[in-house]
Structure formats: C-alpha cells, structure tokens
Image (cartoon, rainbow, N blue to C red; front, side, top):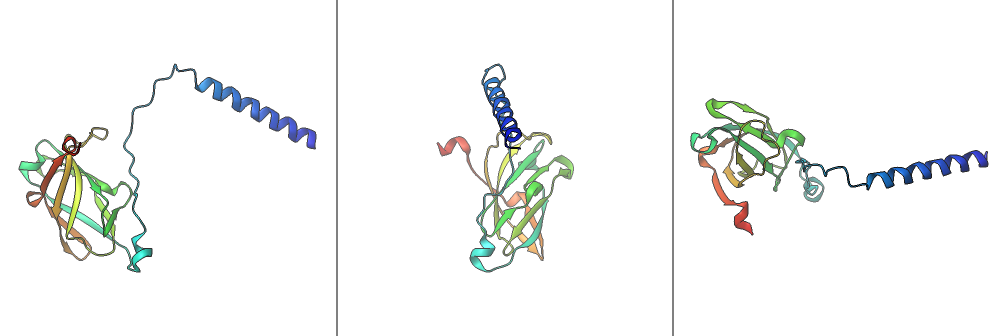
Length: 160
C-alpha cells in the first residue's frame, strides 16, 4: 500500500513540475485586467452592535450628468457597503437603466459616493473618471438619489 501511495505522489509531483515549466514559456500574453466587485469593508455590525438592513436605491436622472450614459460604481463607506453585483448601475438617456443599487447599511445614509464614467451600457472595463458625491433621501428602505444634486469631485489624475 505504501508503494502505491509513493508512486502516486511521485507522479503528481512530476506532472506539477511539467505544468510549472510549461507555464513560464512566455508565449502566452498577459490577460487584460478586469474589474472585480468585492466588498473590502470592515464588519461594522460586529463592531457597533447595530444590525444591517438592505437598502435599494432609485435614481432621478439629470441630463447634464447622464449624457449618452452614466456608469456608477458605489464606493463602500460607513454606514453602508455594496451587495455583490448591486454596486454597478448604468443610467442612460430617456430614463433607461440597467443594474440596481443594493446596499447593506446600519442605518439609512444621508450621502453616498460613486466612481463615475460617462459611457454606454456595456463599458465594464473602462476606467472611471472620478468621485461623485450625492445626497440621499430615504423612505424606509428605499433610497432616492437625485443626480442633479450630486457634486463631482476631482478627476483621478488630479489625485497624483
């Protein structure tokens, strides 16, 4: 039995070494970076003793800000963090949209921040422009963000 396990282990090591040597050949181009949406927030519920509730956001579009389309990514910030795919929303002309803002919050926020980009609906891998700070009105677990009241912060290249 020991002999069979040793042969199996030796085969596994040999195969692993062969794959490792092949992967370093340099013929494969590096993959393009992709946007990953994972919360990096601290567990505020455990730290504060307050309970999370789910909140959903609705946007009132502003033609000055939306243009041909507006891609928003929610930026985690106390008292909320984004829930999975619920952090990306595209708002288009004529009140069209895709995506839904879904947040877990300790209480209803009065202000939230997004990174933003004027682009069409499928502009997932494009770099955003900067920060957009928006006041929020709440009615129970429903949040309303009037884009006309949002304030554009500096563009990313101004942070350098």
